[in-house]
Amino acid sequence: MHGLGGRYATALYELAREEKREAEVEASMTTLKAALADSNELRALISSPLLGREEAARAMEAVAGRLGLHPLVVKFLGVLARNRRLAALPQIIRAYQTLAAAARGEITAEVTSAHPLTATQEDALKAQLRARYRQDVALDTRVDPDILGGLIVKVGSRLIDSSLKTKLDNIGRAMKGAA
Image (cartoon, rainbow, N blue to C red; front, side, top):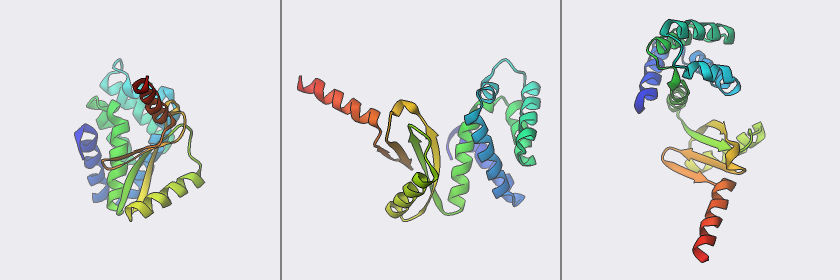
């Protein structure tokens, strides 16, 4: 794991593993990821430079209590707040999920779509990726309406970009070159 997010995620994963609570902590991280995706206020909280360390820690403790997060995650969020690292939370969550997937023998595919994928679409994508990489696949999905349609799938250092935006950009460049 690289960078700040990777270091914090690794530390949390090691603590969870020592306490044999990997699944509970991962579930809490998934809950936290969904809350970040759904709440503008929570995203503003983690990125606000105006809150003091203790105020941010108390706010995150309240959020964690409301979300029913595992006590280890609650303590971890307090550490992040006191170290002024809450802004790195999305990267930490992504890195934690990658570590947990690797421990289960899975690879993680980062998938960006213009609209949320249905469970059927996710299952079909997992099946295709499983066949291609001959390994179980965990999906880390994001929605980005700017890609217009299609998918962007990143597995390790490999990138598969079938987004409509990229296709239109390529056509535009080809037309400029032909003129």
